Amino acid sequence: MRVFKFGGASVKDAKSIKNIVTVLQHTGYKNLVVVVSAMGKTTNSLEKVVTNYFDNLSQVEASVSDVFNYHHSILIDLFSEENHIVYKEINQLFKELRTFLKQNKSRNHAFVYDQVVTFGEFISTTIVNRFLESKNIKNTLLDVRTCIKTDSNFRDAKIDWKQTQKEISTIINKNDLTITQGFLAAETSNNFTTTLGREGSDYTAAIFAYCLNAESVTVWKDVPGVLNADPRHFKNTQLLYNISYREAIELAFYGATVIHPKTLQPLQRKEIPLYVRSFLNPDEVGSCVGKGVMLNPSVSCFILKKNQVLISLSSLDFSFMMEDNIGEVFKLLYKYKMKVALIQNSAIGFSVCVDNKFNKLDALLAKLKERFQVSYFENVTLYTIRHSVPSEIKVLSKGKDVLLKQETQETVQLVIQE
Image (cartoon, rainbow, N blue to C red; front, side):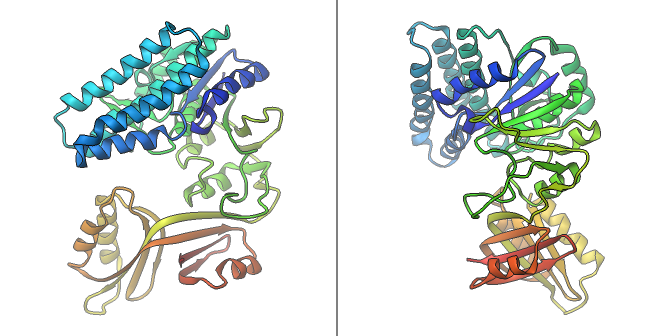
């Protein structure tokens, strides 16, 4: 078995979907599970639907219509027959979305989010399934929620591995081509839709690979492979041909966006290699994450995270920041769902750089101010450099307001107010 994953950029329009056929014809498609993300920026558009649902109800239908029109234009480019069944199937999905928005009674934002954004993946996989059929590529469309089971932690659900292993082993036909959704799952108990966190489609592919003992996972992207930096922010980037699991997990932990942080653990446990290849040039070798060489070529790797928050704390009475104080801080960070990217402490101070993903910063700061002196900077940029040399750090920080610097043997981190 092999597992492929096609992300949003690889299914963003009719041309991209046609290119999936080219890739599958090039690689072969027997004994294959293909995980597909929502098309283009559909998840962002559906997030806007959720925002309007809670904050601007009069605009909900307009935002749903935007999503519909985007996909309808793709359908017209792919399917010339006006009575093709795919039109009926997509219309039915949008009918279900509108019905949920009208009938739902829950005010739990995370729950509503997961029930709404799910439609992006179901729309994309329905279109891919029908287009492959039109090109005589036989495939089975699978609702991933019948396989991947989780707890009820909406927006960042945890896998029920025992039940997921059982379902995947039972349902997947290893001799066929299976098309399924990334990012999505379902509660083990109540069967409500859950999601695995943003960029969770890579994780979905890894889950299938682990449960099927697959020989490999290939993530098809619009880049030649894993680069040592994001070319949108850095010049003269280099392709990394080989990366060890350990190094890739470090890069993912610090925020490298090519590979989802949770993707690598299940693959490493069974030593399943992960390939990152270009869907535009399927002949190119790309990058391989696996067992063996740490990094090839041996170069510095740069990671940038924007819109972070730097919070600095000290005790009210200038006493030491000991384990009990720091423990209380971490409890609050967990309670308010802050993703921690950097920590630094001194005798009477403690600093942390976090991602305010769930917009709970004000509530967190209010609680922290009950026990600590608090200062903070919003919209800072966090640079993480692996295997750096001093000259690179000097160039990177030149002319910038460095709020915090932290250096270990392999990693340098800079918090910069730009």
